[in-house]
Image (cartoon, rainbow, N blue to C red):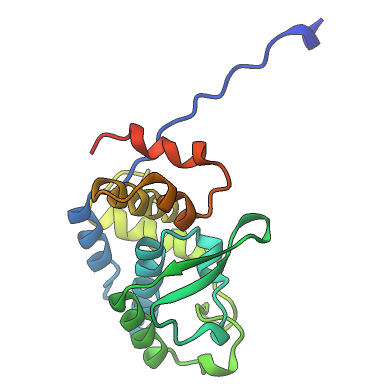
Length: 187
């Protein structure tokens, strides 16, 4: 009977980090002439927030206005309601402040920081689409997604000599084995 057949092992593909020079190109690629200035600012701020903090898209767009100003760190609620403190770079803070100034909706009276075109909470899909347009305009592969920014963060930290346990904490992985995948990436 069919129940005796082994299910095929899913091949665990290695994450594909984005090279640092490509990160810069991608950041600039959000500056699309067809886009409103505040949308460009929002997308760039979100991009930096994802990349420089190693966040999942849901963690980033769940950022609430009561967390502002971020200063040097932010408390992030990850998978399974687990919280972790993540350091925030000055460049990321500046990008978020810039976006706040540009945003036509009063962010201070909103629950969430990253807003959609109608002033409600931004959807992950809208950023995924913005990222698709940006990566296509600079010729990066389809593996260049919001989540690949998280992989890039971890890989770039590892390449800079950050130890695996610290990266595990920063990413909010409960098991070190989830973080060890980054040691197998050639870059």
